[in-house]
Amino acid sequence: MANKVYVVGVGMTKFEKPGRREDWDYPQMAKESGTKALEDAGISFDEVRQAYVGYVYGESTSGQRAVYEMGMTGIPVVNVNNNCSTGSTALYLAAEAIRGGRADCVLALGFEKMQPGSLGSTYDDREQPMGRHIQALAEISEVLFPPAPWMFGAAGREHMKTYGTTAEHFAKIGEKNHRHSVNNPYAQFQESYSLQDILDSRMIYDPLTKLQCSPTSDGSGAVILASESFVDSHGLAGQAVEIVGQAMTTDFASTFDGTAKNIIGYDMNVQAARQVYDQAGLGAEDFQVIELHDCFSANELLLYEALGLCAEGEGGKLVDSGDTTYGGKWVVNPSGGLISKGHPLGATGLAQCAELTWQLRGTADKRQVDGVEAALQHNIGLGGAAVVTAYQRAER
Image (cartoon, rainbow, N blue to C red; front, side):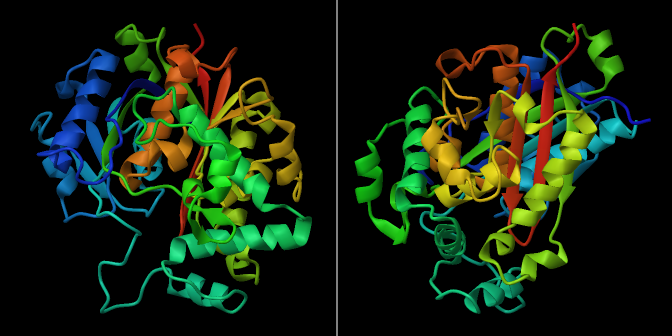
């Protein structure tokens, strides 16, 4: 039987526009978030037995260089790169170490120091990991570069054509997430916009305007995970949050079934969510707060369906119902999501974990959702990997 896994400490930096903070390299980012997580857990780095460190853009063993800012204790440090799901992959691996009894206290750390502008490839002398995905989408959609807005925008267009979803539905998601971010001091953007502002902002790939797209960001997040015995011996039950379900899926053959939605991971998301619901004994209706991967507003709408918040094809109706914001059935992306909080790739999944931990503890300040008993996290990277995690407050 697998050991229980608890989040006992979380920390993150404010997410920033690339280069905005002077003398803020990735070691400094990691030290800031990691130190906050250790302080939150009330432990010293000497008690950490393993570390899993995620980043997408960086040299080999950057994870060690980052961790050394907190201490050099000789522990295993594993570098993790899984595209935009890198942070959640580090979290998943750290949790696996606890579940398997290989360690009783593990650090999951993620950071990114990014270049301004759209994402690009680093190595152009070899096969691109997403080459097959791009080729498959090019067979059913006009091609646009950079690839990311085209890929998610094409899935949005497909949904519009199939189910009658409108550009306004996607814009409403952007409006919601920007509105939520006003109360998040860690967010890169903390400004609300009207629905018309969202619709009128610069078109990136129809129907996605600039204010519906996540920006490149610098920043870091960190999580301390612990076993049940560690929680008990350190008196951490009062702040511990249990991971009650967690799954990672990669591409299925259905990714290349000729639909845009599966090229961007719809089936991966569905299967990961089902596994987590089975593990946790919970359904979508049992969660009060959700942090999900809104790299573009179109993806958030598709995730409503993939995660089971509504039936397939009814994402637009769910948007119109108001059930994904305060006062509705769920509060989705109270942090502002990737669209407004920012998206430093290696840190995103860990920042989602931090937000949900604060929500479950009741310490999310002006963002606090009422009556949070269970929380759901979703993070995806194309090429591909989807990670879904369910959390509940530890039994007192």
